[in-house]
Length: 414
Ligand SMILES: *Cc1c(COP(=O)(O)O)cnc(C)c1O
Image (cartoon, rainbow, N blue to C red):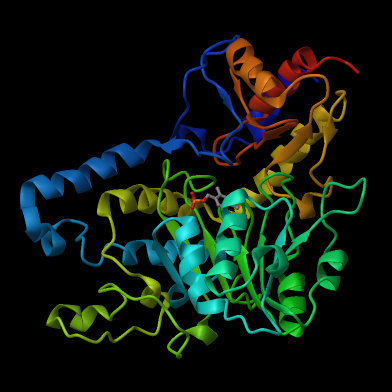
């Protein structure tokens, strides 16, 4: 692996790094970090600061009149996010809303779509689900009066394997399953699940199928509407570059809109046209907006709007193509090192992330060495997993080369 070769690849396949602020390195030979933690917190688009300040200054200039008179009026502000978010996940605008945070959205959607009965009350998740999802489904089961140990089915890979096989997942979807709630891309292994096949199998078993797209949105192309997914939610601070704790997205399939599924409501659940008539009963719109509860935080929506505009302009299909090239290049460099990549090697079964199982030292210590000695930012999941995500918007082949050469020095040969 040569540095010149990496630089040449960058010249031919440059990405969009110029749209982002890349932090300075705290060690190593280069001024900027090689950033591989975009699956944890994406970098800040340069336009975010300017556009957020514009929205903030409208408040100073207009006070309450900003609801209607701001350049981007606050009252319908959330609608500016709906179209770009819908296109990103392959949904109709009426099926999509940006609101709250991810786990809150999962709860609001489970209020509607986890309707257990004695004979059908189980929830299927991955054993390696992100803890928040595990806590959420366990607390939902308890809320409905079930024992979480009994109600939650945790899918485990076969002995000696790191990822789930689609056929094994399908086989576990029995007649007692009320809800299947899996990660579209697993946060730990980086495995991209076969969303359409598992969704269809869940439906065939009589279950509702929801997806946590925290690691999938902005990473891989999605077709939630065509795949007939019942509901989904995702956060915006990972691949969607909208800042720490940024607002999340939610999807509800068209066939569930406007019906009588139970929902928790507030004044933003009612249709906009008559909201200010201040009636005691709501008139929910026939859209995912009906799942909103409160009036949205404009200064939190602003960075999501700026970021979604970038995805909308470039297109997730184009980004995915560069992502496959970039991640394959990194995978090739890593294959020469004494490391085990636990992410599937088939590009169709993974997104941008490669997870490595480290032996001989702790993942946290390795991440810290990479940061301070090489200026490479990776993410450690204790005890032994290191995650690297080359992000097609701003990561470079040279970043990948830096990560691989740093790992070659920092990881003891076994
Ligand atoms: C990042 C992540 C979360 C975080 O939840 P928040 O509610 O946004 O704090 C939840 N689930 C998964 C799968 C994640 O990757």
